[in-house]
Image 1 (tube, rainbow, N blue to C red):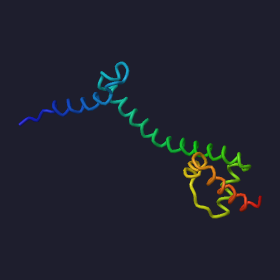
Image 2: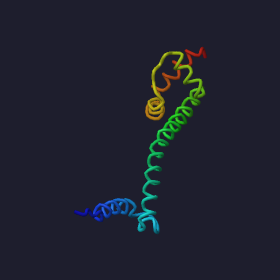
Image 3: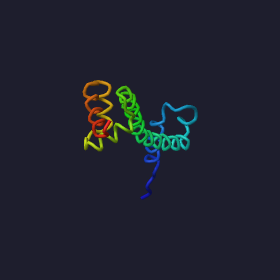
Length: 118
């Protein structure tokens, strides 16, 4: 008995064409181009998820630096002082404190200053 593959091939093509439905021009209509743009989109999505982590870290560092300079310390001095004082707090939490609870952030700055001897 002969096995035909048309059904499976159609399913495979529909999967790609459904994914690229909103893409511009021939990318949403031609199977080969649709397949290429599908894989390219998945690659960009993967890279974007990785880049997002670095972007947030950059944002946190900027916020901490601004708040620390208001208190008379640079960012790197603050982080170094906290490490010397054995304070285990991550940048996300420090940034959150600098924006929402300046008094608590000031306490961390004072701890860092005392550890640095300033």
